[in-house]
Structures are given as C-alpha cells and as structure tokens.
Image 1 (cartoon, rainbow, N blue to C red):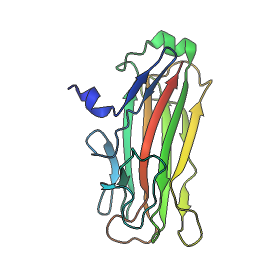
Image 2 (image 1 turned 90 degrees about the vertical axis):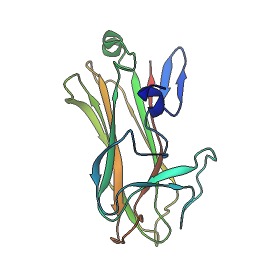
Image 3 (image 1 turned 30 degrees about the vertical axis):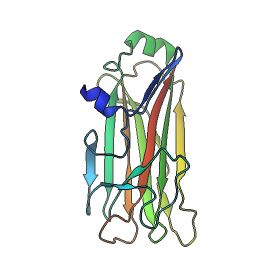
Image 4 (image 1 turned 135 degrees about the horizontal axis):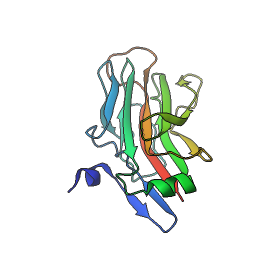
Length: 191
C-alpha cells in the first residue's frame, strides 16, 4: 500500500469533483506534522470518551484530543502530487471546502482554532481562513460536537498546496487530555 493510500480515509471521484478526506481519521498521528505538542501531547480516544458527547455519525468512532498546553497539528496537501493539472487549477479555480468538527468535555472548558491556507508553488499564502478562536465553557456553553466549514472561491491563479492546521488546549490546565476534541476533518475540491 502506498503512503498516499495510508493517508486517505476515503476518496470519492466523480466527473466534477474530488472529495479527499486526506486528513486521516483519528486512528493515529502518523501523517500529521505536530506543530505544537504541549502538555501531555496529542492522543486519540474512542467516541464518546470520558465526559463526552455522542457524534452525529455512528461511523466516526474516534477523535483526537488535546492537553493542557497548546496542541496543533498540520497536514499539507500537494495538489500536483494528487494528479491535478496546474493549468486546470489556474483556469478553473475550483471551490475548496474545508470542514472540521470540535467539542469540549462536560467537565472542562477548552480552546479551539483552525487555520486553512491556500498556497502557491513557493508555499506562499494566496488566501487564508482562520476560524475565530473558540473558547467553550461547559457551565454556560453548548459543548457538543460543532462543525466549522469554509469554502474558498475566486482566489486567483497559483493554487498548488492546501495547508490544514487545527487544535487547541483545555482552559483549566489540568494534567491529562481535557482539551478540545477534533474529528471529521475534510477537504473537498469541486471543479
């Protein structure tokens, strides 16, 4: 099995689009660059986890969880290596939709953030989406699974890479894995 096949949880090809859940399911961290790995570091847990919430898709059985210091992980998708033609990318400027799911435990608050960048051949940012930093407090917020989504359009020529980075930490600085939980990350490219 190629390294690419190990990274892809599912790929759906149609005549008009490619949906690549290139961002692996929370089974391991092997294909992620851990840009920050503080506290007790990243780990994976089974859904719903201690003091957790049920997820709306029963096929999702695991999630990544963070600790008491910042934990961020990133993956860069090389569109040319995925078989996209640079001329087609420049002319079509396909819509790029990113999704991610996050939640907090019921006993400890957390901080969540997501940054997705469309990059050119020199890894320079063409455009970027930053979710607002979200702070969840289980005493006053709905801390169940929440989807964040963004679609890039009309971003101009030059797209060659997509950088997807997310993570956070807990708000009480408790030792262990009390920080934000993330799962269901995806990138969809529609021509």
